[in-house]
Length: 455
Image 1 (cartoon, one colour):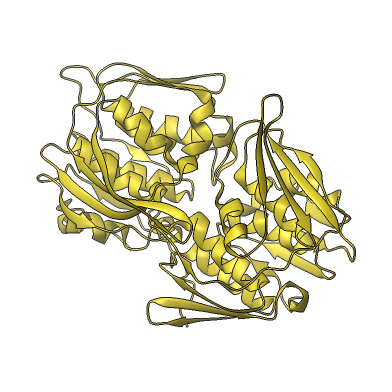
Image 2: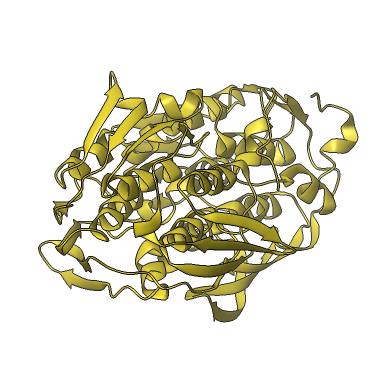
């Protein structure tokens, strides 16, 4: 059985790519879908086979947690096999559930645990312990669960599940697929209709996977209330095999690198094309990116396709706030693209970035400023000045703040910049994209060839 790796600090110096990036690749399985596949399979009585599961540390934490609750989870060649007694057969874990760096795992699992009749304890690494849980504990407490947290509603947290869960009727105050999913998962064991209103549509992997596991989910568009999602509990999940598509968020890093490194020509196969996740692709095309989607198909209930990317001259863009939920994890690497583009860009409605693995808005601004980019924040908007003639970019030190997406964005900046970029820690890349540096080097990035890695 694969162990969750112990992380140690791994600084890195990234030089400009020695030549074009070229080749075909597949990115790891979608992290959001991987978490859900393990959780839903553990709630379904019987055996589920999962192909393409992301084997990063975040997802392995979810596997460990579901195993502690009573599911049998093993690896069989390319597949992961989950055999479970079903939700009613899960039991109180003997030890604290350590969710590592994964906010998705912690928040979705809180939804599951809130309606199971036993007590659980949850913690995480230093980054996760600093992140607020109030956005899920407030609605979930309304179903009868009791939560005990540290000051500021932070982990470690005790979850005292309720014996008879009350269905929730909840309107999201901010767009969040994690909160929506937590409420829906809590509703699986509640008697009656659970209802979630989201003013702005968020990624709908939970709704898709619930249907895949045999749970009817209703989604209606309302002119006043936005998107309204309902399910009726108690609901019984049926074991179904799952194919996990390539993660579009992970694909964003080789995509932007290929656009920015002159002469590049890269094909990325089997990427998820869920409409709630493709905001970056639309935005890059608006910037002038040569990004072509082909071989579109459906796998495991999710749309999938192949992406062909060629190096392009990008121009500044204005991204509307309503697009944020469909690309919330991609803003750091988009900001890198904007820094290298011609003309200014304004990225609107980024309040959700403040409560990610780090304050990603502040961390992204710091990444750009450290490397010679003019950038400012106005309210929840980030304004990035594009590259000017003769401007030399790079040469700075990036503090990743234990955030894997900041680390990968910094590496992309270094590959396209004029001076080396110093990244203080790349260890946390393994949480979402195992083998990222090796994959980029297979395209010709030359990251590991310059002798600058340490650790």
